[in-house]
Length: 285
Image (tube, rainbow, N blue to C red):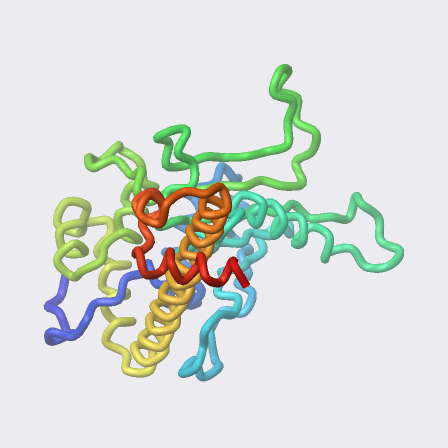
């Protein structure tokens, strides 16, 4: 790999959802996208020959970008729709959200008067930086609609793949997918260089990720996205803390109504004695 051109500047990995789309939806990186898809999906090779990336490049000015659709969407040779997204933060009801979005991609295909047999298959790939399925340690899971007893599949119209980075084994498991997940996981030039040293096949995508990092406009919009994500995390944290505080106040009020002493209520809820006294005065009004 060539020497770094970042000169001490922050390295942006494809952990950032905007960087992920800038990298994998770039037509110049088509071969990397196809390699990633082949590592995840079990499709015939002919399916990759006619891949069309929808909305291949992000043209708008993202200085004030706080959200937006940052998925990588494409169609295969047969017309199957593949949607890839990276979830930097797990949203509430994430499992339901994944199911809803796949259903939406199916439903929006049908125009008035069209038949169900005209529907194209929808494949959703969700890469997560946090753990969603705590009930197992499998980092790549595949979901279909099938009978749990007989294994009979109701339909092939949808397919969902989840990939959880925290579950990735520390040691190489012999798969191309592991190498790509390590590429996505790499959060520094050092980690990227280490990956290339141990797996030379990843040298070209690593070099092009460094090129993306060295592009001034790309860095500007990625940095804006990083700030938006930090603000969102702060907002969520504040909302959770506010919710916990409200819960404590409600518990304190009920305990006070039951005649419990201020000191004991304070010890149970963790609220200060002054706050408990304030709650008591409010409840007496």
